[in-house]
Structure formats: C-alpha cells, structure tokens
Image (tube, rainbow, N blue to C red; front, side, top):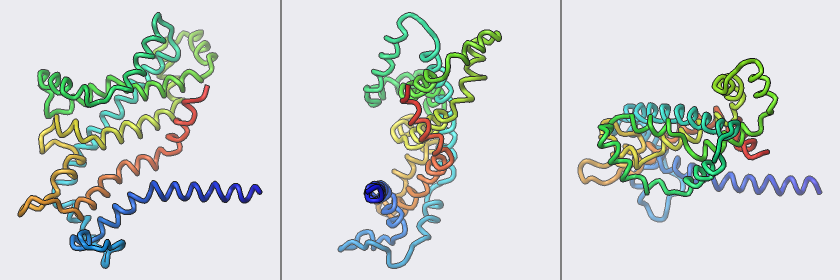
Length: 274
C-alpha cells in the first residue's frame, strides 16, 4: 500500500515536472532547427540536422555580451539593494514597537495588489524631471525602496527568531542596528537567498522599464532579444536565432537558482511558519 502510494506521488511529480520543463525543452529544440523547419507543415518535432550554429549567430547578430553586461549590472545593483532594504524594513516590522505599526504593515501589504502599470507614467515623469533617464539611478532608487513581498518574507522570518537573542544583545549594550547586522542578518541566509533569486529574476526579465528608461545602447538583454533579432533585408524576425538567444538569455537565472536553490526552498518554507 505504501509502495503504491509513493509510486502514485512520484508519477504525479514527474508529470508536473514534465509539464513545467516542456516549454523550455521546446525552446531548445526550436533553437536547433533551421528556418525552413520552423515554418514546415506538418510540424517537425525534431530537427533533421542540429543547427548548433544558431547559438553563435545569436551571440554575433547583436552585441549580445554588451547587453548581457548591462542586464547584469542592473540586476545585481537592484537585487543587492532591495534585499538589504527589505531585510531592514522586515526587521523593523518584526522586532520594533511603534504606534500604528500594524496599520502601516497592512497598508504595505495592500500595495501588493496594485498593478505596476498604474505607476508607470508617473514614474517616468519623475525620473525625467530628475534627469535620470538613460542612467542606472532608477534601479538604485527602486532597490532602496524595498519590495512589499520581500519585506513580508523577512518580517515573517525575523518574527520566528528567539526573543532571547535580542534581549541578550541589548544587555551586552548592542543597539538595534548592531543586532540586525551582527545577529539577525547572518542567520537569515535562506530568506536572503530567496530574495536574491526573486529580485534578480524580476530585474533580469523586466522588459517595460528598460525599454522606457534606457536608450538602445544601454538597454538590457531582455529588450535586445525581443526586438533586435530581425532580418535587415525585410525587417522580419529571425525566429531560430531568437530562440537561440532566448536560451542563452535564460542561463544566468538558471545558474543563480541552482546555486541558491536550497536556501530558496528553505526560505519560502520557513518564512510562513510561526
């Protein structure tokens, strides 16, 4: 009975894994096809000859590494700053007392229901008036502002830590700043890993903000892959090269997740426990 139950669970997990991995696998197969096979009918499920040259074409068709550098700079700045600022805010909500703290926390959580598109035009106007268009400063300010979801994760994690740690540090003469940096933050690596993975993927995959705030030379890889793989003769997309570029574009996020996956899973699991 136990063996049958475990077998059923494994079959369900394999089916779900196949469902989620399927689109990425199809993207890789598409990247290895020729242009004629992409438009063939009936559909060629596998390429007749593997076109590995599509990946080199994707690297050389546009300044791929230059755009990747821009994306890496922006995503790193944003993820590091928003992780630190969200951790600090979450620590305040979890361990400090102040009038109206619960109301303020509720207001913070309510902003998670606000679509980002609502603030797009006001944000652009503000940054334009401040002279920050075509610079990295918008992502610095966004990072310093924190993210409601990440603040919630840190708040839940810090709320679960023993009160004795904080009390012992206060007896030894530590202020809340030192308590945060010396005690709470070093022990929060699961949530730090979760925050880094989520915020890095948010910034790396963002299309709207870079296309709105950055020029063509300083734009990110997401915008370049989506817009610049076109045939100069007739301005039509080169689909097999787009697929190859998309595969290369996904690799950094996958590498980061594989490095931090244990902390990511642990952070998501433990932040909701009381």
